[in-house]
Length: 353
Image (tube, rainbow, N blue to C red):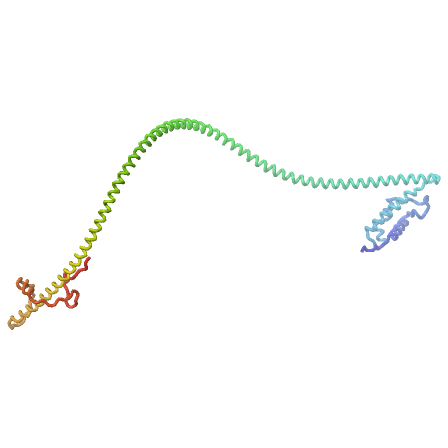
């Protein structure tokens, strides 16, 4: 809800008229038309103001008071213009003159209002144009700065491109010289290539002729070797059959020899056992003979102080004594390996290989 006004429009109007009366201006509706002095805009503003009116009323919104003063001012000024006194003229003519004057003033006021509106519109358009011009000027300044930066960058690029162009021109000159040198070398290489191709064609023709001769010779030699290989194969087949026959005969001979070797091994083992038994008997007989000989020596010696026995070398057994010992009865033989009768190391049976 809107806040109620502290001062009404009637109070404002009455206070304004009172202030004009105090200033010496009569109300346009109070006296006669000829005796009243018209209220002009300057006299109204000199007598009444928003600050004075608010101080007179003691309250009120300055904006509301300003709008009310503008309305009262327009009304009083318009009424003062319509009530211009024309002394010395008839009433009808004065009334017509007032109507003419009012029409002229109205037209003039309309022109003034229209001109004022036009001026305000022009001023607004000018402000808008000025604002647009300022914005455009600022944009142009920014664009000018950017263009200057781009121009500086382009100048740097142009300088770089000029340096590159100079370097490229130098390289182009060097490449032109190198190209001429390479062209001369290419011509020499083409001449050499043509010579080499001609030589190669001649050598290729010679090689083809030699190849044809060699191929014919190779075919002849291959055919000859094929016949030789067939003959050699037949001969090797015959030799292989003979070899198989010989192998079969040798296998039979091998079996027979293996049987003979096995029987020879058995006979050798039996002879070795008999020799070992005979050696054991001979050793035992020798020991018995040595014991008898020692007893006989002790019995034949006189009772004399015993001297240390001398070590005599072993006497050789005469052949007759050996024959007598051999004719003596033999003790029962023991099987080889029986404990109690150790065998000499040279008579021990060795394992057969």
